[in-house]
Length: 238
Length: 354
Image (cartoon, rainbow over all chains, first blue to last red; front, side, top):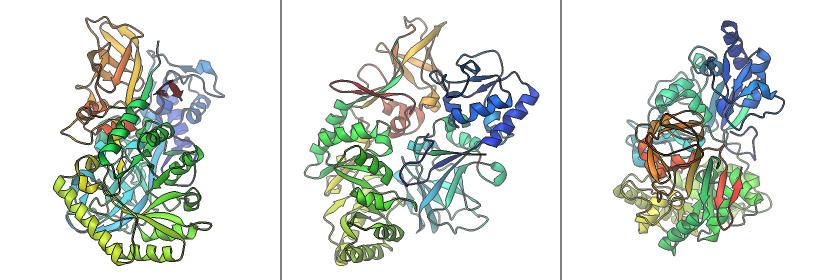
């Protein structure tokens, strides 16, 4: 995942909530201060160089990292290990994908097209979805090359303007389609180009959770976040 | 011990591009290098494509086109997925051909025009229901583009669409819709020099859809776009291979130094196997940084090279096999192959890019 933008183009963003991570880790330390924090695979795509200093400052003693990730600028190497141990290894609760702690990552993109469709319109490759009635379709610029698994086709829901809408048709390499007409939404389908689409984020705010995506894509939530691609720009927030 | 890596065989890629461009000639070949050339590495693959029969490149979005220009690529470049923040002025400065699906894009492009006209390709939706103007909106889009061309702010370089590959009948219907849209455009004073519709699938099997240019993607990377014919049967060779060392062997189980953090699909467990020394061994488990393999009663030892997938000529699985095991397409297997592993380019002299 990239940590900075290039020339202005499509917006694909993984927002990292550092204070949520700090809160999660601090609460875990209150229960048991001997655990090892699992920060393999670049802290499962959340950014090891951002989150490891926060964990160390909070009082975590040992951090497990991937082989080849043992040198991080400004971090004392003796705090990092690549070895497994008998101590408790914590991941899900630290990154907030356990359904209890605060989610650290929120993944968003933008609507790049909105258009009406007739009933029976085939959507995306193979026409695996046909619109059941006259509706409005939105196109979103994220696809399986960005790490949105194709298995989520016709299964996932995304948040737009306060409503949850089904992702319909096959997810393509760079884009997917949302049917704005089939679900009742809070604000109605007044979606326009440029609107923010949240794939997962804060369940308390009505967004799908990373754990929902884990079910839709038959893999672990952190496996999903670890595999987000470099076209997604990571933005840190306090 | 050799390190975990992704090998990109540039000679195989050149062979595929030559094979496909020869097949569709006199239609031109545009090679899709979007999504970092489907995970293979955009700049080296762009150069190899232009050396072997492609005369233009499909890049999806403006920033990717600008990156190719910064790397000295001077060929025609085509970008078609835009957002409200897309920098059209930079695209026009860099002579990037722009796909246009909607009036808001046309307005943003003409507003960004200063020193020279923008080069646009108008897109009609022929049934895929992603981008492209609806038939109802098409005359309005064409008329606005023709007016902008007369005013000198753009030139209409092409009319195009994209097929759903749903069935030969559906693709034939889409081709008919495309021809109707071209007729409508002609009647409105738009005579585009170039028509393009086909990607790999129709480029290979539907000669009527080749028109002026075929945008080849997945087939050029040596993965079949079809369910009923493999890349090998099409005379194509898979370009990407993923290899990693055995890092530990204990009681008949070998640990291999790549895992789900490298894009290896856990959904494939139960079906998937890897190749070591030309023999196949079943995968037992996949963790974030490693996978375990059943090597009971074999001589596999630490340091042995494991092929996760490759062209398939030394006992290893191909990306097509992994796609079946994981319930997806080969495109996803290669496009999601680890970004943290180095790409090693096999050519006259191998080059590693980290």
